[in-house]
Length: 169
Image (cartoon, rainbow, N blue to C red):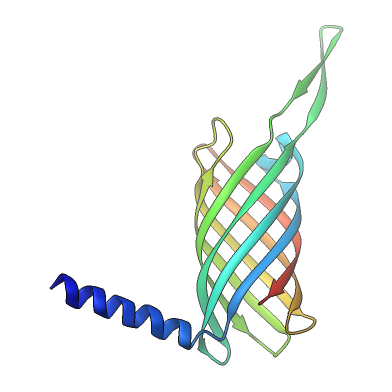
């Protein structure tokens, strides 16, 4: 039974690579925090990687991951005639998600990533991750996207609005 299952898994895996028209994508993004995230960070940068398989001519599905670092703010607070600086730590996430894209035209797409963002920084447990996006492919290899990233944390959320560049292979 194990051999049959292993053979079937290898066949399906190999078949998916033979039909993979979507391909491998890597990118970088710059984002501004909104909501709770804006209270403790000033901006974030991230790296993205995804692999897509073509389900139809207009629909791609796959997996996505990446790394995001949000840079902590330094704020000056005043109380009772005294001023002091408060330094917030950087916040880091490693998202692991299923991804889908609908190609509205040959150049324009809408899509979303859904999964879990693993918290890397101290005191960061991570949470449910969602990232809707719209993008435009300038060429077969280079595109740009606009996205909203939301991470549902215990007792709050982490949200950013970002711009990114993407390279397809």
